Image (cartoon, rainbow, N blue to C red; front, top):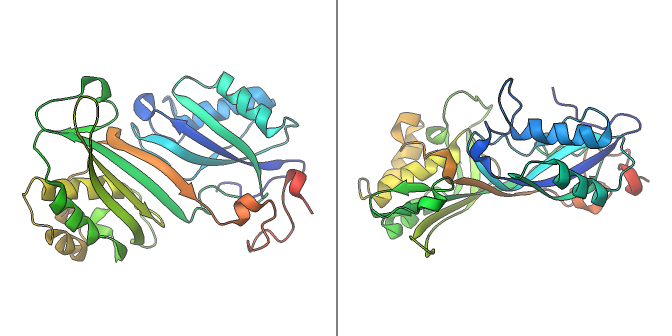
Length: 282
C-alpha cells in the first residue's frame, strides 16, 4: 500500500508535471523498462540524497502524454520548492518538465484526493498525414462527421455505468462514473485538420477515454447512428463498444482537487485534523 502521510521530519509536496509519453512504458515503475515514475524518483533521489516515492494522480499507459500530471511525495529536504523545481528541470530528461513544486498538506495524496480529471484526445482525419505530429495523434483515414459525434457525446454526459468502456485487467469496486463535460471539435492546424475530443469526469476506468474515442469514431464514420451509444452504455459489455483508440493521441490535461489542497491548512479534510506540513503547520 502507498504511504499516505509524511513520516516525522518529512514534508509533503505537490508537483505539477508534463511529459512526452512516446519513449516511456507508462507512468508506473516496471523492472527493466523506462517509466516516468522511475525517472522522477531517480532525479529527486539525486537532488535530496534520500529515496523518494512518488504518487501520481493517475497511472498513464505507454505512449500517453501529460500536460498537467499531479504528483505527491514526501521528503526531509531543506531545499525551497522553487529550488527543487529548478533542480529537477536540470536533472530530468528532455521529455519531462516540472512546472511547479509546492508545499502541500501532509496527508495530501495525488490519486485519492483528486475530484476531477480532464483528458484530451487528438486525431487527424482524411488521406493527408501530418508526418511531424505522428507521435502525438491518431490518424483516421476516413473523414469524420463531427456533428453526429457531438450528438453521441451528449448521451454520455452525466452519471452512468461505464462498464462497456472499461478494458479488462484493472478491476474496480464500481464502474459508475460521472462525466461533467464531453466535447468534440474540429480544429484547423498548419498541415491537416484535427478532431479533438475533451472529457472531464470524477474518475475514469481503465482505457475509458480511449474506448469512448473509438466508439465516437464509429459514429463519425457513419457506421453507427448517434443513438447507438445509448445502447452501448446499456449493454455493460466491453464488446458492445468501439475499438480502443491508440495511446499516442491521449493527453492528461489537468487534475482538480478540493480547496484544502491549495489553502495551506486542510481544515475540511477528514484525515488532516493534525495540521499541515512545512511553513503552513499550525
